[in-house]
Image (cartoon, rainbow, N blue to C red):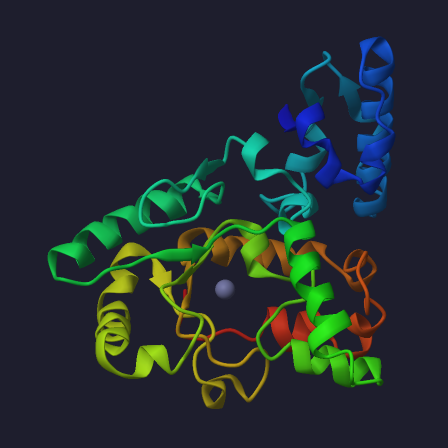
Length: 285
Ligand SMILES: [Zn+2]
């Protein structure tokens, strides 16, 4: 059995969360139905039997994973799409060191290794500071839709508008930040990492990050057949987990699941999975 969520987590699983009854048995029933609805939307595989879901008690919902474990993947689509609440998922831990932000999360192994890396860097006079870590679906949706409705609102053609945003921001449901394996460090600026203190930090990461499992997945586009996001010298991925998550993503996620945001209709035409999700540094393993 795996824990999928509890009532506190529910709103990220389903937008209908506002309708949840707040007391008594009605809470259990409506929570269960909402959870099941949400999973029905996402688990399109006919191999998964929805009647295996059980409401165990008023706090925690469980799903029988006998069926899931027969499938050739480790991560369920909800995790891969960011449709989980990190605070309620025991695979995630709050980021307490090497950040000024409150309430940000990473997968446990990714965080522990980052702390070791940052400790080592600090001994050598290099400061690593996490400015963004795990992002749930709604967080990425807010980033995307803000750009869609304000900064790039002047571009009337939806494909062109989406392409412009995609220079640096992923569509909700296709961001590696959903996975809890990615960090943005120090400054969201390639220029910052090209001179002075920033360059020192970047050079240290290029030389040492791999020892801690981290890799710059968005390297120079020349080395990625000019596909995907622009270079991001600030974005580092914890490959021992993210490599598996990418494999699982490519097996399980299709365009019908990349939905729920303004401009969603452009995902298929732009072939977001092939042209962006897959387009990472081939030197990262
Ligand atoms: Zn990033």
